[in-house]
Amino acid sequence: MRTLLILLKREIEDHFVDFLVAVGVTALLIILAVSAAYRGEEGEIPVYSGVLSLPLIVLLIVGFSGIGGNQMYADRTRKTSAFLSTLPTTRGQILAAKIIMGVLAVLIVIVPLYVTAEVLWRRVMPAMPVHSGLVFNVFAVVFLMCFACYCLGLLIGRTSNRAILTLGSILLTFVLAPLIVVKGFGYQANIILVLFIGASLVRTWRKFMSTSL
Amino acid sequence: MAQNVVEIVNLVKYYDGRCVLDGIDLKVPQGCIYGLLGRNGSGKTTIIRILLGLEPPTRGGTFLLGAGSAGLSAKIKGRIGYVAEGHNLIQNYKVGRLVTLCKALSHRWNDEFFNHLIETFRLPLDRKVKQLSIGMRAQLNLALAMAIDPELLILDDPTLGLDTVVRRQFLELAIDVIQKQGRTILFCSHILSDVERIADRIGILLAGKLVVDCPLEELKKRVRKLQVIFPDSVPDNLYITEIINQQSQGREMVITVANWNKQKQAIIETFKPSSCTELPMSLEDIFIECTKPSVELLAGQE
Image 1 (cartoon, rainbow over the protein chains, first blue to last red):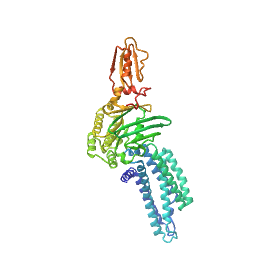
Image 2 (cartoon, each protein chain N blue to C red):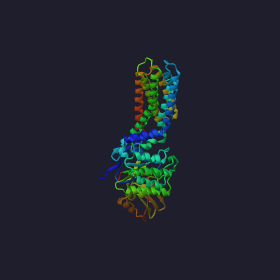
Image 3 (cartoon, one colour):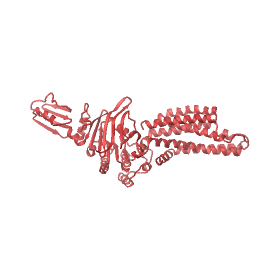
Image 4 (cartoon, rainbow over the protein chains, first blue to last red):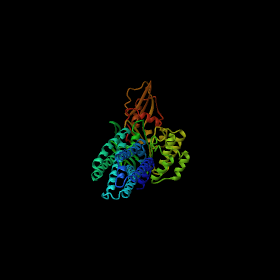
């Protein structure tokens, strides 16, 4: 556990810029959402349309697949894991630290947005007749979508060059964005995304554990 | 019988359909300083990478400190110091940060010894690793490997690119490790005088095969270079097996023979040579002779 925490700290420090960008984008989105919410008439749904629009989904998909891909690509080209695995660590711990870092990066973006959306929903549109878990459901799908992109980024970054990394991210955007639009923010999208995450992680894990570093 | 700290069983490795290692069997007992030699591309680094679990083997098994290389635990790795060829440290880290990371991950860290090394090598902690010279990177890598007081030290051409003074410092450090009881060193180097100075067992790789695996002293005894002068002319056939190299000029013949023994000496004497002088051979001479083609003579013999 101690080793994992040290490796996690290392990952966060190494990708501090990614975290800063994520925090910056989140802060910007919150400001936009709040200003949009207080500008709109009561009864409209500016929070939903402002924060969770299609461009935002595309931004999140590209952003998180980029973070995952860049993390693994840099690791491979700099032979960081090769060095780390000669120290008292295991490959499993090195990869686990990367995955946890990804979860944290997604949470840093999603949790503040979720809290903002929840608060705005209650304050600005108290009379809106919707079921209580709507905002949570929406953000659950967004969280899974971001994490799925990150996992696929890890896989692409491990196996290919920057060109394929970019193409992979674009392809993923074209698959996931329509999926969200068609399936909506319900349990069906959740199941598909969980399966997607599982498949990506298993493939990344197997590659990372068995190939040369 | 001492425990084998390093064990390789029928190791085979293919790269893109090309056989790099062809059925290597090797055992390094505890306390042994094993010098693994071979020409460029002979597979030394591949063996070390497979041993450390950085590279999967095509076939065969490798074991370090009793554990399979593929699943080396963090605890086992904490007992192994490794200096990589080219010193692949994390290049974009500052030296101080790299040291902090290694120290945090290590199970035992000798601060006093490490600081002594850092002072001896005059390593700047505030500079990035990529800004260090090759020599300084080698020193840093060595200091990091030594600071954990390793039971097994694996050195892959550690003195490559070092000047004479630093190389001497390095060897003294290696000797320092050797003097600690039970410590084992596996190392590759192209500087054979270094190997000769500290190794007590030698392995020579040739075309993916381990053609020599025996104690250094025994190797020196077994490989003989003789200058034989015959009374009339050099005979067409000496009827001696295991001749590694043979050169003739006039009445003089210089032969290098593997597994030299009394029978071979008796065969030479049947030709009634005018003189038979043994020429001294350094490890470098033996290496050059042994890495010529058609040498498969000394592997696995004790």
